[in-house]
Length: 277
Image (tube, rainbow, N blue to C red):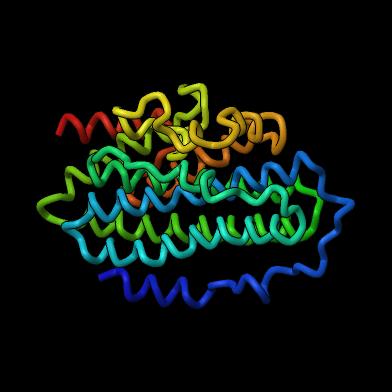
């Protein structure tokens, strides 16, 4: 089982919301209304770890090891929502999300192949790590800068935990080939976000056919158009940053498969080889 050691490793670096966030350093003059509103939207988006966890527990009901790890992932992701809301509660209470706004992003996700879902969320953690790093640079108020830097490191660690499970599933005799095909397929799609015309992340993908088009987390935010505006006009997540996400996905898949993917073209070629086999 991977869960016991993953629990220990994440426990060693767990931060305390009361003592590890420098609340006393808050500088009201360096927080704009525009910036504060983005904190609210990210708090609601992080709350969507709730339906994601429900999806994982349903689709991985056959795997108690991975399901147990969800207890850690869910706790830390909900803690992200909580620390962002605590920031607003202390300094911009009028922007604290309502219970109705939070509950709006809790809706059922359709079942999907578990290995594809796992790869999708691994890439999502990589992307979110980079989004939050860029957000920490964009913000000017020191406490929220610290918060975004803190939760970005959590997202990187979560990606590392998912990667360990991916290695585990590849090593399974009966399921390894199918897992490899799923990882290569979804990895190629997630690393090719430029072709999709939008940054691919679990929060802006359609996940419930019966609720279409309001079946993305983004579509259920108070402002459904917020995410692209945050990325393009506020934190300015440009081609350079997008290239960093792509490079990190390719680097990790190279390690996972024992290959050298210098580009998405290399990964796509490998994907086709696996599919043909």
